[in-house]
Every structure is written in structure tokens, then in C-alpha cells.
Length: 305
Image 1 (cartoon, one colour):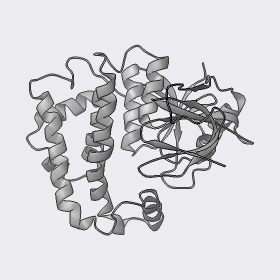
Image 2 (tube, rainbow, N blue to C red):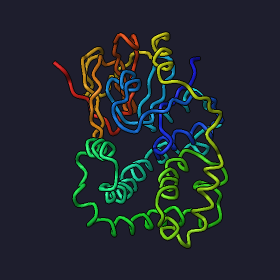
Image 3 (cartoon, rainbow, N blue to C red):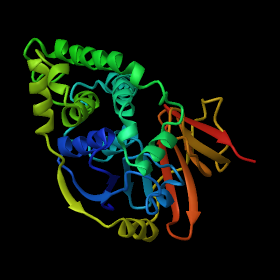
Image 4 (cartoon, rainbow, N blue to C red):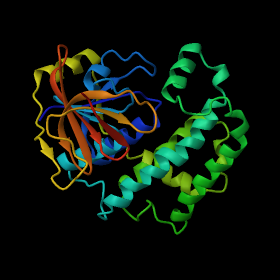
């Protein structure tokens, strides 16, 4: 099997979630450091223009979004499982809380200091989060801080009986889904100690999750990752869900984009359309023929003429 190549940057909480998946499973992987701002000349050829991270590359198959990355790694490396209690639906569903409700509060705090950023970073993030209320962030700051503590209280209450992880003795994806935003707060907000004051179970749990590590990591140049895609062939089997009345035809030209932010579309021929994932095939000079995979939830598919 081709190497696992994770395209990411160190400061991203979403990338940290993917890195912790690698750690829980004890996987060896190659690390490609991606620029925090556009352009990303060696990433976007692999993603058809999709700009968010992390992205997992395995040969000529490219997996976008942490939820799909987790699904694919669980499929290929089922032991140790991300779901020791078989709680797949709930574990994935918690991402709707952490990656949206919790992240929205964090984003408000981050945006409130945008006037102090370098111009390039500010312009890039305002483009990425184009629908966010940048002008109103300072007015919402006090409320956002109260929400951070409220998010912590949810997890702290789950851990109050002394369990080491959210579902008991064994860590799982549910812990990784919940922990990455706390990781970001603790690293970046001077107020984090006040946010989580009195939440000893929460802080001890975050330390235990962090101790799972990131697996075995070897750096890789971004250009070498592009070359690896070109040298490989996708192993994806085409499949269209026959029971889905919304499904386009196999091979239809479509545009796939996130439905929240960073909505730059990836365009290609439809290869997979199911209840959990989508995939399109693109062909270009630098990468050859590759297949780009997205989760079904949170992504829209638009037909192209």
C-alpha cells in the first residue's frame, strides 16, 4: 500500500484531530507542511482547488476533511478501532458540535484581534471566512468567552464520575472529536486557565488524549507528494448509491464544495456518490489521474454543464 501522507499545518485544530487519529492507531505517516495562507501551490493540484486542511493522500487517492480521513483510516487499519464501543454514529455526530458550535466561539475570539494581524493573514482569513461577522466580532467577544466555558462544562460533566475517557476506559474517536478545540484554546488563549477553572476532570482528560501522540512521523517535501500521486493509480471502485434519488449519473461533471466556509469548488467526473462519501476524478499534467474524496455530510454537489 502507498504511504500515508498528511498535508497539514501545525497550528490547525482540525489537523490536530487528524494527527491524534494517527496517534491512537499507532500509524506511520509522512508529514507535508502546508502554508497557512493561499496560495498553496502543491496542495490545490491534489484537491482540485479545495483549500482547507488537513488532507490525507494515499497514492492517487486524496481524502478531504477530518471526518472522511477518520473513516478511511478506520477502514484500512481497523485495529485499534476508533470506535471501541461501536459508537460510530454518535462519534461522528459530535463533530457537528465541536467543529461548528464550539469552533464558532473560538473563531469570534480570534477575529476580534484581526486588526493586529499581518495584512496577508487578515486578507486570507477574511476571504476564507467570508460569511463571518468580522466587523461585529468585538461586540460578541464577551459572549463568546462565556460559551467557551459552557462547552468545557459539557465535557467536564461527562468525566465527573472519574472515567479516563468520554465513553469509559478506552479512548476513541469521540475523544478526538471533542478534544481538538480544547487543545487550541489551551495553546492560544491566555484566558484558557480562567475558561476552564474548576474543571479538573476536563484538563486531565485533555492531557490523556494528548498523550496518545501523533504516531510515527517523517517529514516529506510537498513536491514529492505531488510526484507520488502522479506515479500511483487510484484504487477507488466507482459506485453510485442506487437507492438515492438525488444521485447524479456516474461520470457526470460536478462541482463539490463545503457548505460552511472555504467554498472553493473542486470540479471533476463523479466516481462515488453515497450516504457517507463522494468522490470525483480529475486529470491534470502535474498529478495525472487522481480521485478526490469528500464526506457527504457538509458538502454540496452541483452539476456542471
